[in-house]
Image 1 (cartoon, one colour):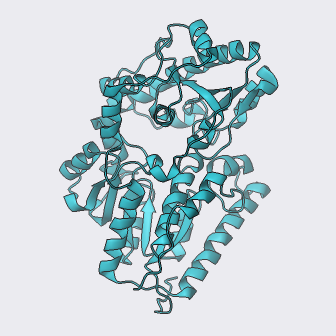
Image 2: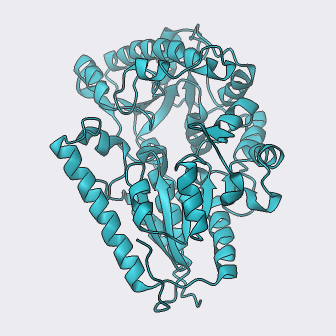
Image 3: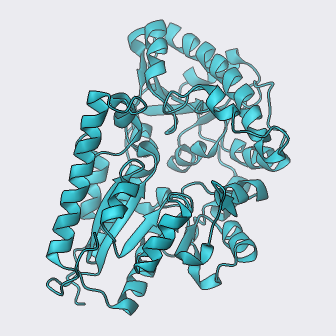
Length: 441
């Protein structure tokens, strides 16, 4: 149904923020939501499961998606025709052709994407912004190199660290978030398409890296130290029970929403080189990469070069024994690299004067101001009832096993649900970051 607009309450409108993966996006989405609320918007968070159903019955003023293919092309067109302003807030930045063309495909699910329906795109850097202008016919004023909201200054804080060793996991190819068999992916992959080569590389790299990490964990625990493993946001944490059984009480699996919360618990971070090194590097935590121990490598030069940049943040031991020794070394000094600082400033647009959260809010605020929209209390309350009902129904389905693919563990670990996931201390602190401003229409 289409809700009736009544000019009862002064507000900029209803914003729906899509949370595609719980531990990758919920903290930054919560941060952005609080910023928009302080600017007079009514904000609702929806998950990968509930977004499509919610938008069938409620037409918000603003929809912020994680990807251009979060919804089908027909669904995006329907929202645009009903005057919803659709924005893309990039969650996976890149600085090479294969990466950006995968993030912003021309065709998805056999449907050609119409990029003109997007009111704006917020990219991590200028590379993606320029690529979109040149390849997707977007107007330069509609694309903003705002930086990643996961690097927002609002989410950073100082803390004292423990003696726990942190393992940064990145095994989502061999440990899928929903437990699907690798055959499910391989059935749809064209091995003759060079853009899919990364998948076959990752299968080998993840397998070898997991075996290496297990050997390092064993050596650390043998010395009586505690290890905290942080699974990748796209991993299923349940298989790590095998490691708990193997290594005992000194092996822990982190379940915090964001890497910044996990970093409070560790004194050093070790893992496969990835963008996950950025947060500990910025926080001044020593990093150790296993990249020189791995025999399997990416064959794509652009990907290899990208990872070489992140390698600059880390110590690079040549074997497992040295890696374990570095983890246990007292007062290990964090690496500092001017070339890496320069690269991160470019990749994440860290030197931008305006915080990425503020940039997004300012762009949306100005566009809504132009449209001069008002919303009714009835529309907002009805939308809240709908999203709560969908979340409750999702829990019931998961518990009753009416949908075999949706287990309660999957819901708990991967999909945001307001009945299961309460805000963390860090998330609750965001409410105090912004001044409450009373805005006129």
